[in-house]
Length: 104
Image 1 (cartoon, rainbow, N blue to C red):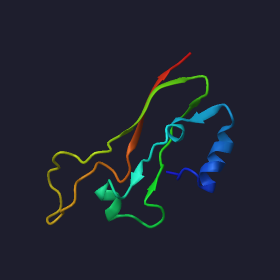
Image 2 (cartoon, rainbow, N blue to C red):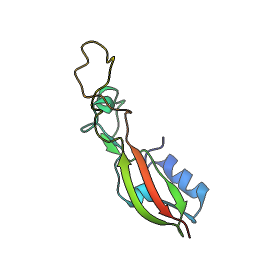
Image 3 (cartoon, rainbow, N blue to C red):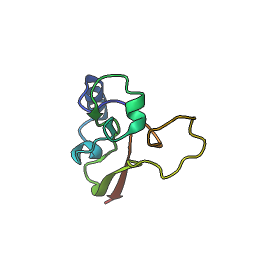
Image 4 (cartoon, rainbow, N blue to C red):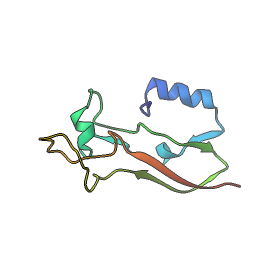
């Protein structure tokens, strides 16, 4: 994962060229948030508490019908959590991105 806005992200964007658009960035999504995701808070290595870590690049000619965060809520029940784990379980330390596209 490469944080949106970082030098590394800008290198990725330049390498992909002008014909591809980052739909997650354009939608203004946040996929890493230590305030909303207890797993992220537990293992937060430092740096920003909120950021876009995930992206979906698509040709600019594709129409994005829907762009949304996925897996951005705690799981209802998770069996076999470690004893004493009092935080809400999440499927990952960052959320996913789902996109529905219309291809011309």
